[in-house]
Image (cartoon, rainbow, N blue to C red; front, side, top):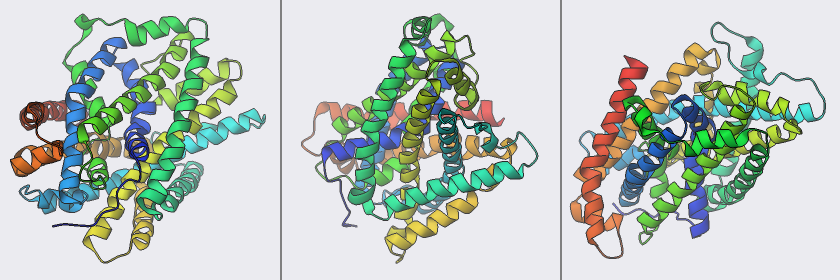
Length: 439
């Protein structure tokens, strides 16, 4: 079925949008604490290999699926010929809807922490942790703060989405991503001037010891590669549907993965050496950003200013991923109903806001939602996207999508790699997730 679809206005806008989707909280929040938890430079080395060998091909597959069908996940799997594809599409539509609820809630925490850093510069007493849900039970003050900040995040996303791809998403990405890069570079420069920071740099990037690697570290690095690139059969499928027919996927995927990789490495370079230099624990887990890092800013000169910069940058990175998540939902509604784009934006924004409330209650609700609808289902979605391109779409059409301007032997190798190696790696990640997070 041929569909008219808005496409990107420029190559720069395309790359800024795709990199913006990929970066998100996965790089600036998740990557540094994963590095701390899984042993520094050895984890980073495996992660880089995973991005190159698995992430780039999987990203190309998701774009190819979207461009081939001109649909998001709600329709793409069925049109690609995946068995029970329509039900699979609806399943992932539901997953993204629920996941966007808790994800925008977490972005609200980032927003509130940024406000806290700004107030500290004005010497106004403020507790940024007041917004965080309690570990258990219920806190009305925390809930009220979360409702307000999440509502602001969702409304700011809706304002961009009603303007469409070129006038909204692409324009916002071209503004936010260069700004984010500038902020991260300033933070890196500040970190590297701290006494003892270079010892942290060696641990983070240079002290590779493969003898310390085990299956958990390897699989965690593979999972982070998929997570950081926003692979999951959803975001990148929708954005792939906006690619022009003659747009080269390999080059764009390489640039996108490279930009995402650099963003993650720089975020880690801004955070991990500073934590180590001040004698704190880099393996503190998800609380590294919201608990440990504010203590770092409290101990360094002009820490309030650099803390504000950090949380502004983190908000920008997360915001573009939230826009992409909502775009998956909006595109699904527009593609499958007679509802206008503007009405679809406000409808899905309202639904997501309602679904953001349960994980606000406490961490006993939030954490399982994150593990189930984020990490686990994201890996499953990537698997279905790769299977759709490698096994369900006609071979000639799949090869044409992977390389639209003439077939080469390397593209045939890439196609076979997508059919066999990438699904095997994804299944390995999924098995590890089931064993460690569920069973």
